[in-house]
Image (cartoon, rainbow, N blue to C red; front, side, top):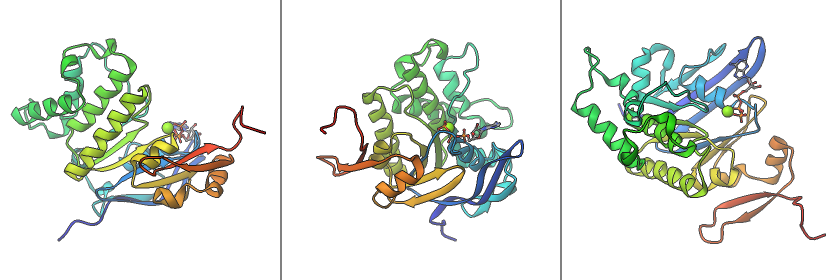
Length: 268
Ligand SMILES: Nc1ncnc2c1ncn2[C@@H]1O[C@H](COP(=O)(O)OP(=O)(O)OP(=O)(O)O)[C@@H](O)[C@H]1O
Ligand SMILES: [Mg+2]
């Protein structure tokens, strides 16, 4: 049987916190091998959706399918071999080094004795190399800069070697150069290894430039879903963010850019 073109799907997901609805009937399909950005205002449910997709949030209705199989049927270890998540604000365990943190990504793969083997060490080295963290491998994570720490977390999710990566605001704390490096790295892994990527990005221009598809959430429901060209319209952005925007194009790549229409200092 061939692989489904849909790597991960949510079907009519409902999620409540203390009786307050946070996700309402969310249905969305993530194409295999595609990079999809989840965007929307603060509190619209992006992180909740990401957590629900990997079984970390208690959904009250609906289901999640990975490769057409309900995730509820999969043991957590099996799920962790298919899906890796970078949470929005991960907590660093005290006293550990970068290499040890990245090694946590191997947990779902460890054998009965729970000891890392050559394959695990190889995966950790590979992830350190890809994120340019080799020189920092033996430094305590607590002593890294915000951006270095963010890369260490990304390395940990990469070391998990899953086919699907869920990244919640992977560019937080990074300067423009490191943002570009991280987004380009993930894109390259997407192209070279067929990784399916779902990332939460606040910057709509970044989302449009580096993603194949965009999903816009507002108040826990999906408002738009499709290629950047069809989602980033002034009407749609007004509806989701209650903001008037103007659209432009990147002079070299042609990627869509959107800017607030009412900028201080604008003529008029
Ligand atoms: N564990 C929780 N308990 C109670 N309420 C929660 C919990 N997690 C999230 N919420 C609430 O659910 C709503 C959606 O939160 P979520 O973190 O999914 O939003 P978000 O779109 O990721 O926002 P941001 O852009 O600020 O990261 C918010 O109103 C938040 O206060
Ligand atoms: Mg969030």
